[in-house]
Length: 391
Image 1 (spheres, helix red, strand yellow):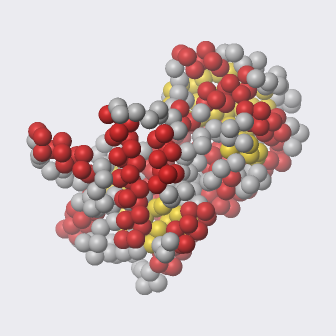
Image 2 (cartoon, one colour):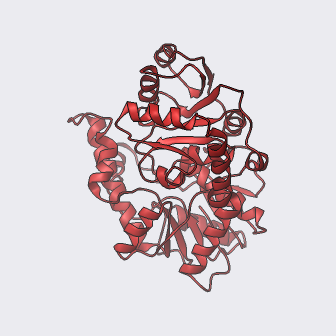
Image 3 (spheres, one colour):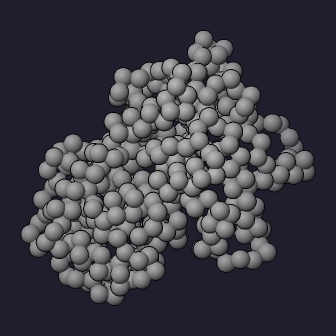
């Protein structure tokens, strides 16, 4: 089975490509990972890699600007998959199907089944628009107008691709139910990751009386991650028997904010993904604040390293945490609810929560579980499928 994954330079979507390719390879499938020349790989690849970029049209001046703006709203597929398929065929490779992590790429001109990841839930335009208006004040500025055009464009691209694709791999059960209700061929495929077997077998013991907390994001100042909100909530009444590690890039203002907490705080600065996972292994509890992510890959990674989690009671985070089986859920609008969730999770039951989180990661979000879900979805959508390719 050939698997072709196109790795874009967006954290969650890139992780999906990397993990999908390696999950299938670990199950004995023949895999080809296709990625842009500009996309950095998370580490040494255990699968063959093809660097490939879609040919860009050579338009100059006003025409190029107009075309670029029109593409924000267009539902026409990118030329990427067509060009990639031609390149593979010229090289003697004939993949019979593609798994695609973005709705930009399903293309009816390519003679092979195509499966696309469904990310965004809820699927209404109002829900898409909230991702812009939640942290950006509505205005007539170029930045806001372009953001809304992009949002409208992605809403149209998503629904167009869902209906063009052979099938949709929905990251959550709620999204799957929504798509099925609208006549879309869909199946739940939870994104997975490499699980730390030692952590799953025996989560790391914690120092008596001290709960080791961690927050991680590529950019800790990004409003969508709500790190400042979590720090302010902890500052409003955090217990002293805690210590906090913040992993990722941070501004001086954020560091000063953290310094007001009545507990020890340490920053690591930016670190690669594999190092993030190493740092997690010495922690007990992962704190997550986002209200808008389509999937919480960092939550899955924390659980895979044996950490319990504190997350908003929102989709898909509650689904990842098993409605609290792997940690504590909180009202995303209530700082007191967040503090209570941290206190409850960090209490005497923390070792049990950590063990439950690790076990859930193995069952639901490990590479073997991911590979099985991918292949099961492909068989469901196309019973004659013998070869799958992944973007």
